[in-house]
Length: 256
Length: 321
Ligand SMILES: Cc1cc2nc3c(=O)[nH]c(=O)nc-3n(C[C@H](O)[C@H](O)[C@H](O)COP(=O)(O)OP(=O)(O)OC[C@H]3O[C@@H](n4cnc5c(N)ncnc54)[C@H](O)[C@@H]3O)c2cc1C
Ligand SMILES: Nc1ncnc2c1ncn2[C@@H]1O[C@H](COP(=O)(O)O)[C@@H](O)[C@H]1O
Picture 1 (cartoon, chains in turn brown, blue):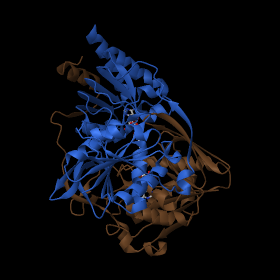
Picture 2 (picture 1 turned 60 degrees about the vertical axis):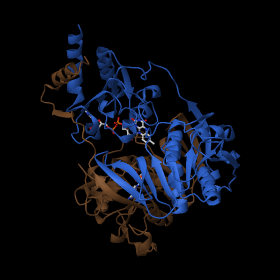
Picture 3 (picture 1 turned 180 degrees about the vertical axis):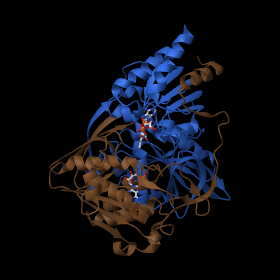
Picture 4 (picture 1 turned 90 degrees about the vertical axis):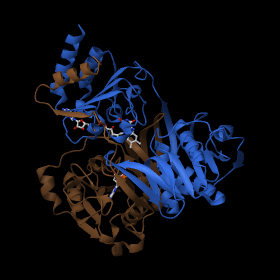
């Protein structure tokens, strides 16, 4: 079996939008989207000690290789990065097109996604990618098992819990409650460097530059502004007296 | 503009969120607004859609849409958009609607803006209003090309009847893709409603993964008891089995608005925020100074909850004596 896991490299720490491009400023430090560590972990759990191959796939700047290497250090077998200047600024329509093109060549039995990209908070990409791959999709999986030719998922919706089945090949997005991602071992980190890491351009994928980036997108950011500030918001650092400070605050508000 | 609103129903009830989006679309006052209802019992709900402003309702009761799964609905919507020629399609966010909207975006190569809190018309152009980066930035967003797809954040609009009349009802049937029809719902657990209700509590102490273990929920319980309140939880800890679903707050849990909300070890994801943001006063304890919850807390405390909460509970108890 082959499992592909889609992972995103996201900015670390406080993030900002660059007012000139109206895009997220990705120039600073980045890290593996922590929601995607759950997807990598799940792939590794399904692999166990079988000969299943786990491929980590990402679309992003060259620096996204750092996050792919983290997935390799956790135990993934190889990595594929789609990276091209013309792909920057891709929205859902364009991103799903590029990722689907990269995934198409992996011929994976199962494609896993994380719960959401911590920078975009879309929680939508898998459904778009599944549509392009013409495969069944199940989202928000909190329990997942693969049995013969099908995948079975338990997930939470607004109305309780559903158990859903789909035949393989399929696309599944996991929730952050599905597992506790492992930390890469030192051996894993050392070994990661030697694992195959392919970097693909749009040309490699056979995708026209006009179908990627802003040219290939169908949404635009028109203007940016600050949110209304909460005038009375206070933030304190615990110096040992935080409990007292909270009680004083509650007393002032007549809440205790 | 010709607008289509995706109405979601559960049992024989149309979901308030999607009726709110319908009412908002009708209130824009540009062109006709239609609705689509797909699933068992859809026809019986069509008239109600009329009272929220739909002049036409597309109804699909095919067996393929009997279960609450997204892909057959993409097939239905693609068909409705093709026959009705809609240039704008609106959804209220839900587990189901998000997957329908994104699948449809890919099917039609159509722009999808998500997490919108409102839309307006500016010089005849549709403009979406949203926040981003955990609500630290606000943005106006647009679409290039049609149809324009929009997914609204839960609770964006009140479902106020628009006083419309009898809608025209049209049956629709789709041809379903093999992969759409391949997914099957094989089991459903209804909501268990054990434990004290958090919906009417004046004070809620909510715990997240930062509590560290299920046993540590006693920290939240003790503090709640001292404050005379109830205990809530995030989805992360509910799905991990640390606390019952009936205590979950957020998009797929309950919406609460107590006078006081104390968040212990909760990051403050949007999906949690939509369930508690209208609380009177919000106090958060989190060891990560960058946690999004601090963006909407009245008092944010950066620190270790294991240090702070036992002391806090003790101080509250003393005060209450
Ligand atoms: C479709 C959908 C629906 C969803 N519905 C819901 C919903 O209804 N309700 C909901 O809650 N979520 C929901 N979610 C999930 C949501 O996105 C988050 O994943 C979830 O709310 C995170 O829970 P958490 O804050 O407990 O965990 P985390 O995000 O892991 O946060 C834990 C926090 O604890 C802090 N912490 C750790 N240790 C300590 C310590 N010792 N002292 C103090 N702080 C500490 C950390 O800094 C961190 O900020 C939904 C997601 C999706 C995609
Ligand atoms: N650029 C990307 N490259 C690879 N996977 C991605 C990328 N962006 C998002 N994903 C995957 O899609 C999931 C949902 O992302 P989103 O819909 O953007 O919130 C993430 O958890 C990742 O698994």
